[in-house]
Image (cartoon, rainbow over all chains, first blue to last red; front, side):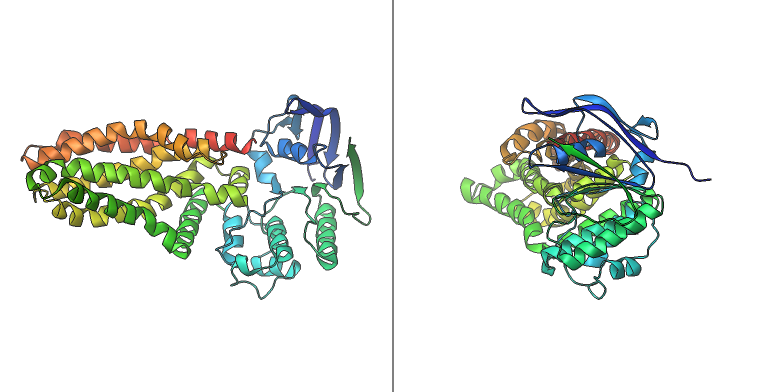
Amino acid sequence: MKRLLSLEVRSLCCIRDDRVLFENLSFCLFSGQALLLEGQNGSGKSSLLKILCGFREPDAGEVLWCGVDLNNDSFFEQMAYVGHLDGVKKELTVLENLKIAGALGKPGHYSIEETLERVHLSGYDDVLVQSLSAGQKRRLSLARLLITDNKLWILDEPFTSLDKEGIAIFEALMVDHIAREGMVVLTSHHDITLHGIDVQTIRLA
Amino acid sequence: MTLSNAFIAIIRRDLVLAYRRRAEVANPLLFFVLVITLFPLGLGAQTKLLQAMAPGIIWIAALLAAMLSLDSLFRSDFDDGSLEQFILSPHPLSVLILAKIVAHWLVTGLPLLLIAPLLAIFLGMPEQSVPVLLWTLLLGTPVLSLIGSIGVALTVGLRRGGMILALLVLPLYIPVLIFAGNAVEMAGSGLPVGAQLNILAAILFAALVLAPLPAAAALKMSMNG
């Protein structure tokens, strides 16, 4: 029997420079669900994701992973984050970047070749990242999600600089991931279509 | 993957990166050589004086070169988001940082060690001091990278952290400077230097164990921006 994973946020509050970004925010996300955060620029979407990753301390409230505090290894084994920064080294090749990403986590469902095929970067193995286009770089940083085994994906504007085809590829990957009992928390300005997926939407004002 | 795999993967990654940015990496070494060559030019042909000052000159130049190279330890990883991924890895951050420090020393510390005998002879250092100078550099330069990592981890989030970094880190380098300089000077007079070398070794081992932990904590703090 599979254990149901959960990410629970209880009356969370975030204050930045004396401005309350959000307060009393509570939600609960289980395996097989996605959470879409909406809101204007500066409404605290990225700050919320940073709190979920443990980069920022919440000003009030708590974040629980399967009922316990975030600061434990089991959370970091299960989560992956793609933020505004790509987190890839431009002087390394595509392959070298994925190898180091693989070394930092547990091996996932896909091999490096399969991953590159899924994000349509096959044949770019030995290309330096600095000669890739912005969209290709983005696809590479999303490829990182596939080569390690993570249940929870935390994605900050994952569709930035992706073209229509790239967005379609990545939506399909998210649907696959959620169907495999995965969880996704994402922010996006684009309309996303996740067919047959239980999506919660939270609007930060 | 296991922790040792991750450790080795990071060292290999940083060495490949250093190789691809060779020009940048050579700078601290050139700086080291240049500072040392300035002394004979500034002091004139006073062989005795240069000979007496040689241990101090070489070690102070090494301290400054190590400090200048520190910024490159985390800067690019901080700017491109690689550091976020290190922090989120299930592996302990302090061990991953230790791997980065080892790679950093191999690229910036080891070359100083290789060129030092030439510069020692250039300054007229007595022959019997040269092996001792190498021992002090071998034991001392890794300490500079280790202690420095705490300073860079604290200042990497600041845009212009260069001067603060120097003020933070240089005072912490003083014990290494004292024992290393003293050992080389004693060796010149033919005195035993076992005690100084042992103390340097002790400082190195203590720093190996103790420095990565505060560096990891400071990096996590720097991310909280």
